[in-house]
Amino acid sequence: GEDVEQSLFLSVREGDSSVINCTYTDSSSTYLYWYKQEPGAGLQLLTYIFSNMDMKQDQRLTVLLNKKDKHLSLRIADTQTGDSAIYFCAEAARRRRAGTALIFGKGTTLSVSS
Amino acid sequence: DGGITQSPKYLFRKEGQNVTLSCEQNLNHDAMYWYRQDPGQGLRLIYYSQIVNDFQKGDIAEGYSVSREKKESFPLTVTSAQKNPTAFYLCASSPGGRSNQPQHFGDGTRLSIL
Image (cartoon, rainbow over all chains, first blue to last red; front, top):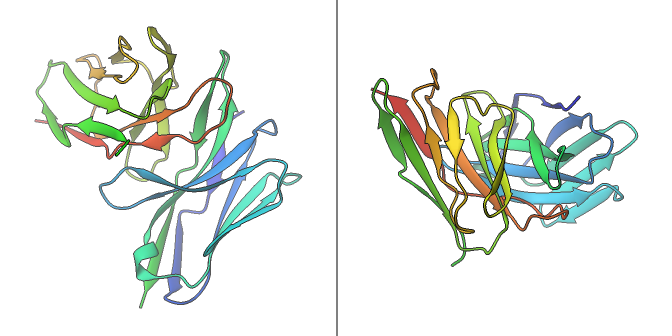
């Protein structure tokens, strides 16, 4: 089946690192994504990783992929109050016809206190 | 600037009324998608379209209809058959085809019942 799971809440102090975890089920997924949603807004693409990679780093963001365990994590270094938002993990899941649609987790609400 | 425009930002529906949510993109993307987001939930796929004049049902298509007469436009109609339409609706687009290029999102439309 298709299912993406994330923990629902994470609370950190400003300046600490945040680690948001995600598990997925579709072993044929080729790309995995992290999106950020601020209140009342749409989703902003943060980063994505191809399934043949173990790690991807982009400034303060580090994505780790354990394909054997189907586990994905997003690490935010030096977390700021502006990082407070909901973070969604998503996998590209093949549909019956050509093309892909994304399967989303329920989102992790990150709360950063100063 | 290229992007996805959703309108209106807020929409109210009366009992028995059909309402249409607009989604326009100038990214020259082939694929477009509609998602529904409920509080504390991830995004659920309503309909998607890989190419002009073609569209497919997603996971929760009942009570919704779409059209794709132009590449840049993918309007969603919430019909009176949708008994629980109150939600945040997000439109997305991607280059499409068999690529797994990320989806880009609009800012959403919040639909409520009067």
